[in-house]
Structure formats: structure tokens, C-alpha cells
Length: 224
Image (cartoon, rainbow, N blue to C red; front, side, top):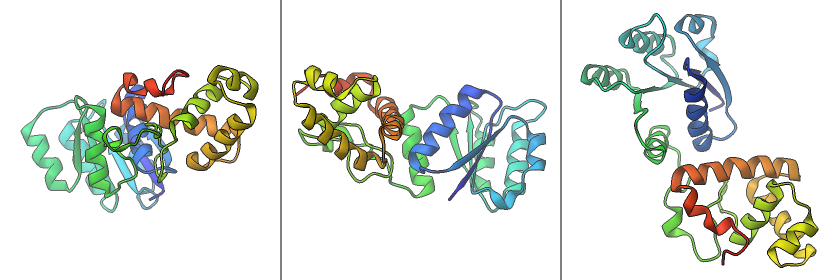
């Protein structure tokens, strides 16, 4: 699976959809369009997954379902909407697509998307399963989360602090800081600090979405 098409006329909603899908299937190339008219200019053969809102300008929900289902019959399809209509729910189910509600909690959406795409790249039960040394920061697709020390170091790196500054804040030697950074690179799947900060930001945002910001207290310097 390589290419994701999002049909959504609200940029914020499109961003949330892309974030959810990218967490489950890393590395997708995403294209966003904001009207059904634009679908006619997209080659269906190049689209692996379509995620579409149902409330769009100049289009009725039933029409959107039919158009997306017919034009992208060979693609996986997810409809994402705030509508609560039994008829619409049946139409989506009969089309073989997945219907997601915009009123659902982020974690619930993740569970449904993972099941629909038959993916298991995000550990949704990481709070209960992690040991005393593991953080909640885990890059989608990575077999291991960052350790608490690695996460604490990367939190400081993401704030733009130098190795010496981090060493002073966390009470460790600069060599130990560098060792934690090197190990974090592997778990984040990167080769340099710029990539590490970018991937750490993605993983941190995902952890906050799934578990709440309060669950990330272990990122603070005084956390055990």
C-alpha cells in the first residue's frame, strides 16, 4: 500500500485523517482533494486507499458513497463523517467500505482502522504492557518503544538543546546522552538529529492522542 487519497473540504479534518492513517500505515504518499469534481481527474489505478467525508459542497452523502465506490472499486475505502444516519450506515456497509464517526475518540478510530486495514503497527495497550524502563513513545512500525531515558533525552533534543545542556538537565554525562541519542535513532528509524526530531514529534503526538498528555509525565527530567 503506497498511495492515499483524502476527499475532505476542511483542512483540519483532512490533517486528522492523514495522521490516523499514517500512524497505521507509515510511508504513504498522500493527496488531498476538496470536491467530488476533482475525483474525475484522478487515475483510480494509482490509489490504494480512499478516505472520504460524506458532507461535501454540491453533493449528497449517498451520491458521494456511490461515486467513490464506483470510481475506486479496486481501492480500500473509508468514509469519515459526523452524520448519524442508519440508511447511510447500511449503504456504506453494503459497499464494502468502513464508516468512521468524527465524534469517536482518537483511540477508537485507530482500532477500527487497524482492523479494517489488517494492520497492527501501533501498540494501543502500551500503558499496561510497558515495563518500568519503557516510555510510551513508539514510532509506528517500530518493534520497540523508546526507553524512558531515551525519550527524556529526545524530548530535550526536540527543544533544541545541546548535548551538554541535556547532560546537565538530566544529570548524566555528555557521553551517556550521546549513547541514548544513538540508540533512539535506531528505534525511530532515522540516521540524523533532524530526522530523529521529526519522527519523535510524530511518535509523541500519537502517544498524546492515544493516552492523553498527562500520561507523558515520564518525559520530564525528574521522572523515574
